[in-house]
Image (cartoon, rainbow, N blue to C red; front, side, top):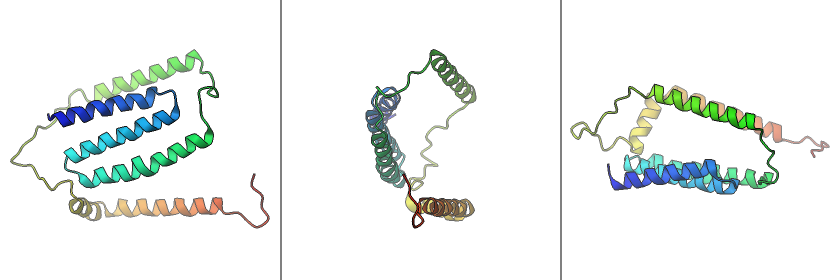
Length: 169
């Protein structure tokens, strides 16, 4: 394993913990942006430059700006946070432990394949290969997803459209 991979993994794990453990929601969003950048670094190590660029542009850019806007709009802080009873914290710990147990049981017998230089394809993560797979093998799911997104856009425009004389608070 390369030292860059180990460094990126270490920073990704620390920043993911920072997302969960941060008291301030804005700090949590900033830790999540750092996590996305480290994951993009992993994509670059895997020679998937397009995925790295899309991850930074879409997730670290657009979605995080939306999250930050919503957090600042709602004015979330520790004082307005309702007190959670001990039973809810206990139930959350049980649910998290159960999820960990299921993941360990599911991944117990997995044997990851090692690196084989004879069969390695250095062009596997490039845009042209991704486009060929997307438009050949997955053309129907791609078109169905585009129709679903179009319907969601039309629905949001129709819901947000005001009629003349209508008052929204």
